[in-house]
Amino acid sequence: MLHGPPHSALVMAGRAYYTNSIRQQIEQQGAVPNIPPRRTRIWKSCFSRVLYRRRNAIERMFCRLKDYRRIATRYDKLATNFASSVCLPAAISFWS
Image (cartoon, rainbow, N blue to C red; front, side, top):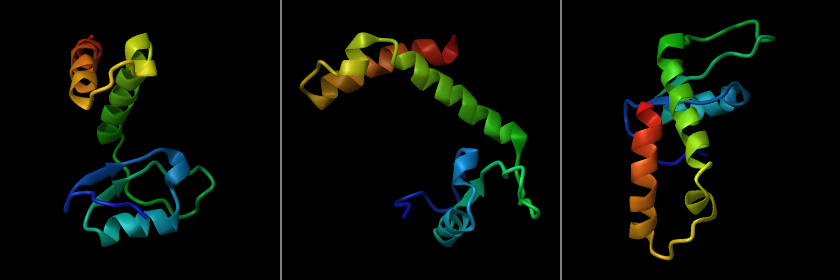
């Protein structure tokens, strides 16, 4: 069960999450799913490739963040210190 997507939010997920039950859960909570349909589906729902490209950029940013050993292993004990050590590389890697 998905918890907490804001009302009228756009939920983007990978092709593996394209099932009727997940799409219904998202719609029941008032959000809009943007999930690419599987190639074997006969009925394909609405899907925006332009909006989906933003998801790929965010995934690449998280992949680059894991290259930093300090973030991948989480050396910081306090959550505030960890959050600050994530913000700087995230900003740099997202815009580069």
